[in-house]
Image 1 (tube, rainbow, N blue to C red):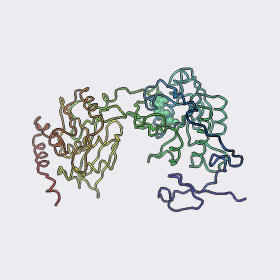
Image 2 (spheres, rainbow, N blue to C red):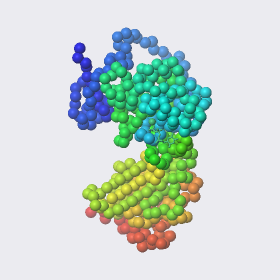
Image 3 (tube, rainbow, N blue to C red):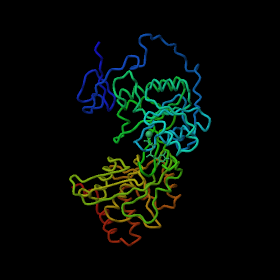
Image 4 (cartoon, rainbow, N blue to C red):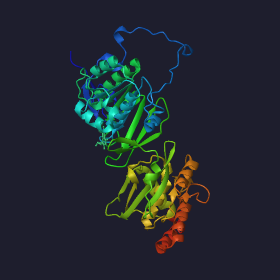
Length: 471
Ligand code: TYD
Ligand code: MG
């Protein structure tokens, strides 16, 4: 019998019997990869051969899940999870290599082991000796974590069945393999199939399985988007490899809120929780041109961070727009509004914008700070001095208006906590981006010093009525 083959899109997981140059699922080109069709049993989940009908029960007759959670005691992790791990759930933690996934998962296992829970660490990537080396840095509790080194998902499930841990870490999904599949570990079929088998084991044995997944530069968890649908919870661990903050976010959480963020910093003895991130993000001393403090939200918490912009004459056509930590499209929008409503022409300038410290701001509330930073950089005028430092937040609308954003009071309060003022935000005397720019530059003018460039910046803003631009 000829082996049946299936073509699966490496991007979105779309399946087809035929090959397509362009994936009918997501429209990507040349992403369909041929592979052996999984057997009926492992493919769809239903044992079609000996299926028997089930007896439905009224929800009222079913005992609700207790909702009990296993808290690790690592506060930043527990908060992102919504209080701790849920028994019987499959949690995916993704991140670029080196960000600290193995460290965080080992620390979680160690914390639970220290609290008397059964745990298991399955390492598919590293030898037991390597895992031990890491654990030595993390302290005594980490050395108590039982480890197996295995990539065969069948053997892993059997081990979970016998050991019955409360938490099982599997590091990582990319190296797992189901020997029944011909394709290589890390392929869409293998990743999906092995994750599905771990999910089944997690549910049946009421074990929380914490699955580690590497994320490629373009942000996909090794291609298979399908994994995100399968698991109960998707955590993303982000940050710069060498320094700075690491942010843990929940993108999907069947048992809690998404949008919460946990902040960590890599130290010599593992990841340290960062309780007060605002303090370390705001540089001291007078700000250079192009620097504005943004009162952002990380989850439900306000967080001060520094937006930096650099504007230089461009040699490139089209000029470069480079952003780190800020969405490129939002930067493009802010630049367009700056041109249209504030007369800031950047058509022959390269613009670089970055959030200091490797943070990423994912909310429209960052727009105004980006706009002020770019304007300040373009004019060479610093927005603040040793005593005063402009803080901003707010969304920039396409009509040049400023739009209110969530939790304004908390953002104001966070700036006040560090004695930073003035805060420029939507509403009041600054309903528009133009008004906000005028306010920021007039504060700079009061200081004197760079009076000449401030005056020219002010007059350009004032003279840039939208009607004049329309020509
Ligand atoms: P690791 O957790 O192995 O990252 P990942 O599993 O996401 O690939 O470790 C990330 C980096 O952190 C690694 O380069 C070593 C460093 N590190 C420390 O600086 N301090 C520590 O205590 C540990 C355990 C690792
Ligand atoms: Mg690792």
